[in-house]
Length: 452
Ligand SMILES: *Cc1c(COP(=O)(O)O)cnc(C)c1O
Image (tube, rainbow, N blue to C red):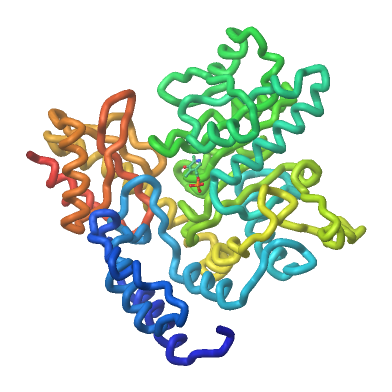
């Protein structure tokens, strides 16, 4: 198992080379494709199988049953459009057996990842010294950030029952925030909002109406919401949190990247108040799955809460020089960790930041243009103005089933992957733009399929 196999290596590298050269890669069929269950059932044997035969099986029978998220025609959920260089470097990470757990094991990886984190913290306006780690996704980032905030709140308020502390969140917060609160045993003060945007005024009103406002130790803002792309009032909520010593967590898993946008960057000015901030390079920063940046304003506090103690790990914490000890495992829930920030770092360094700015801007501009295109047609209409790169629109007269059929037919016809969503109880259509090569022609082609 540890011998070099030139034939298998060439076959795998050729597969990767062919895939990288495709422009675009096939959208493919996901769950709509037939699955080769009988053939699959014969795969694991005591003797093993020829690598080329199994690669062929993957290519022929399994790959078509996976929708590629890195295509300009994937407009559902939040897509994932890794750059060519990020995909290439992901192979370097894989083939180098890199471990990203601790400074002692992998200082060379950690300094490069930290450079990427520092760059993002700087764009967010967070102070020098901010830092954290790359984790597997926004969900894990939210869980870690909210855990640290909970413990800080408990420490600041010894007079409170530790089980009573709560976060103020809005109903439009991502489902992973609710899940994280469930995991850490913290309740939410659910704040009602006007038009789904969490503002300072809405927070003040909710606190005033609540019998126990003193138990609220933190505020969770979203920038922007996954369904609609709405950026909460970061400046208002952030200053309120500062004034009242509340933990301010900002979930920018999807939209945080738009802090780099020329037209929409101003919406993110309040990020500078964040105590913890999450943005997913595997969404709008064009890195492969799975990669989220988790950044703390005060990493020392996070380390106090989350560093794992075990006698066999003592050596990782033995250096006296704070500056040279940075264990990514101290800042989140994981211990062992893939060096998942490295493909993003390589992509950022090789293409340069201006390329990222224009790729992000391309989707925002297309969302605005799509709004005008929808205005030209009689059979579709906007549900609300586009926000960031999300466009919500409806086809009046269509039932829930009709939206579902239409979505599956688009995938069957390999035109695009677009899924319906719900907005205020109504089933509607939604585009989430992310790949910079998605264009107006595709938008028009999809809208044409909605005539009957
Ligand atoms: C996607 C998303 C998440 C979850 O991130 P994962 O990387 O899928 O774990 C959390 N919050 C928001 C706002 C998101 O868009």
